[in-house]
Length: 289
Image 1 (cartoon, rainbow, N blue to C red):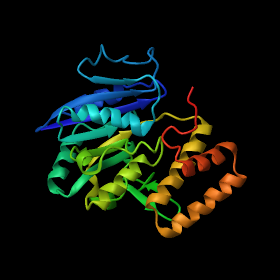
Image 2: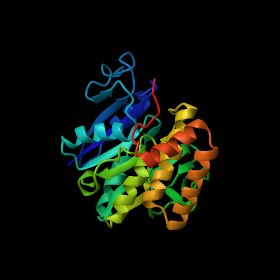
Image 3: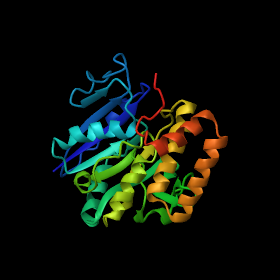
Image 4: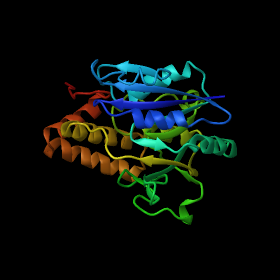
């Protein structure tokens, strides 16, 4: 039995040593554990700085930024060639505690109809202050919020829970997910690609669970987009997702928003709406330097 961890980093060079060390220290008792790093949009001078220190890690490179959905797919495709039983998708800013994978494996044995799992994430491990304990969905406004964010840990959060969304930076999946529902949809470039995947999982009768006994710590820092890219991709992918998956009332609200943004919005907002209805998705009109 095998797990492969996929660490996705993109656009900016970041310190990978903490997460790689934490993942290496996760030695599941019944499984082999391999680690892949996806370097998405890093130029040659930034790539593979850690290869000498971590020689047993597989590095997957794309010098051009190809988007989060396509970057993750690049790593998933290569990982699946090694026939793993599970994939753990994470990023450089979430550090698993040493027994986390054992806890997630135990949960996978308990919940046979679940394809995806997420652990409890702390922002401050010494104070047990929660960053997320699964996610909640506001379908009316298409907002996906961390459950218990900034709350102290307590008995209420010490039970497993079925949820409907897990961000792709803290996602433990059975490898058969990809044969059941396919890879991430690359029509989404940087937003809503993971939510779309979970809609497909649930539509096929499978479940996602928050696992209270699996713990990780979220560190400070992150990778950010240019403001214009955030404006363009968030609006475009949100409305596209809404028209595919949201309740009827939310679809109507999204159409109203689309018309308002097209006629009265900023230039990148207008471009986003135009690209939805002309099918110019994926990287779309935005030009990455």
